[in-house]
Length: 326
Ligand SMILES: [Zn+2]
Image (cartoon, rainbow, N blue to C red; front, side, top):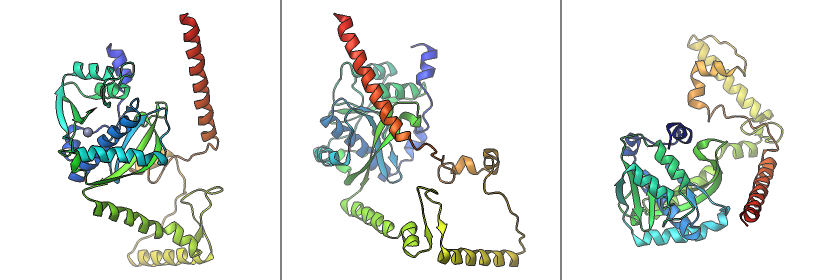
């Protein structure tokens, strides 16, 4: 592969962890990341053609991104979880193997990485790209549990049986490396814990949090209304009772500030991006405080149409190939 091609395919991946980051993974993160391998194993038993991209632990569990013509839904979770349970019960060790870059490229080309066996004609395309992102000189390793081999630097738990308790939670759309021009993938989320008690406690806590959600309570108490259609989520319209509370809090803040010798200033609510960059907010709070506003109401419909057009173009190309080869 020429240098030029290599640069194009090896786009930086914001999700990539360094070996240093990996060494710091906690026991719980190891359990969760190991569970992502088990999830991939299970999905491949059901859909051997699946192509896996990236499967890290996250704050609430883990996910694995994959490409698959079948659209996985919540209805599939039961049979996926059943296969996962079999893999955990088999108590297969996570075996590490260090390979050369050439070997890794050869195995990915044969479809073996992120697979249960070689898959001729179905190269492990995301793994091929991930290999390009491994810096020269950094060891390249596989981890194998049962028949599943994944390109991975670890760490994991010792055996699949060490995954105490798990549950799949949601499925969402995701772009490869977060790039919306890249291929669209399915992201399966799950969570895992050391044991069933901790798993049950986690879901109980989620239920409690839902019950205590300030958006729900505030609306029930008649403090504010949230209109997602006309105004936007997270933008409360304060009703009379709520307004009293807001003003009382403001009064208290003013009195406290005055007593401490502060003076007040006023700024506009909106400003140019440059200001938030200078203040240092934007680099750290882009997602939580300043998420991009979605102004396009037809996005979903357009995505559906684009998928349909892509399908038709593929049929057309298949037809052309068929008749062209005769
Ligand atoms: Zn791994």
